Image (cartoon, rainbow, N blue to C red):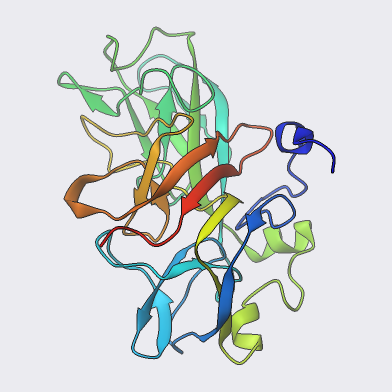
Length: 268
């Protein structure tokens, strides 16, 4: 009954969204209950693999994944910002991207919103367009111009990145209670694994790659998605990465979950 309007009009109900939006997702199979290895650490929405009779997190894009973790086996996780607007400053000028403790190589700078447009590469054509202190979240503008390097001073660009959560973040969102942090350990290491056809709205997608002449990611609706070494989905297929599904809905600054259609077991 009803329509799909909520998928188009929903907004983040947390300051720091993370994991899977279970209220919007369509899950046909959540196989379980598997036992997670004691040493494993994974977030809701990451991909798991079978190791003997147990499961643990994927560590390589070529691993054969069993499915997606429905719950957390961590103390603190990650969240992300999508399309935060920055105004290009003069060379050596600095600006905060809004957060510190940014996940390594996760920031992508684009010329437009909605995961498209040109990527403003950190380094291209012999020039440094920008550098980022990932600990503090301070970005320093470089020099240069051109389509793939730094746009003109005063131009608005948009950054997307992943950051590590703190205990204060969890307290602010009210998610620092039982069954929200490390709920797998509290359930005697039992974990439900989402497999088969599903449509998930999740934050566990790669937001960037190693900074350099070809850094940054853009996404589009219906684009194929593959497994990353970080146990997330990505559009990077190099190196024999396992095919997982397709983009169903792009994340936005107002709803940072990516809609992903999973097509069941990946191709061997």
